[in-house]
Image 1 (cartoon, helix red, strand yellow):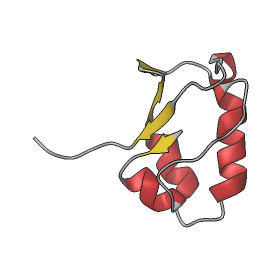
Image 2: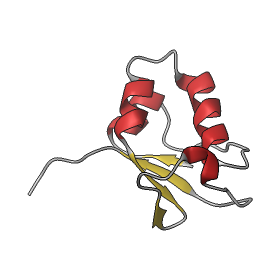
Image 3: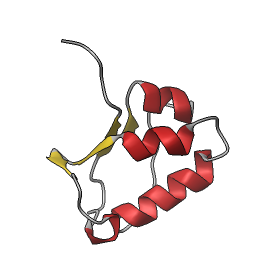
Image 4: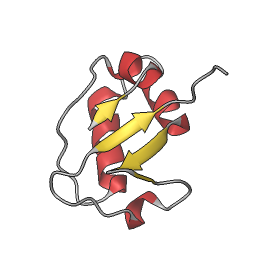
Length: 81
């Protein structure tokens, strides 16, 4: 999985491997690993999430299955024009 921009700063890393069968499990694991870091959980809450190349949108995290080896990306809102 990859963290971009403010999510990378909040996690303190750009990439990591996480084993999870669904997005809810992945979110719980990264919160366990990095939730102690300043603003991590707040930043992740506002990120757009891509599983593979598909945006998760408003789907329930427990209903988003993760195939082995799939990429998950956390993209915080970007400013610009």
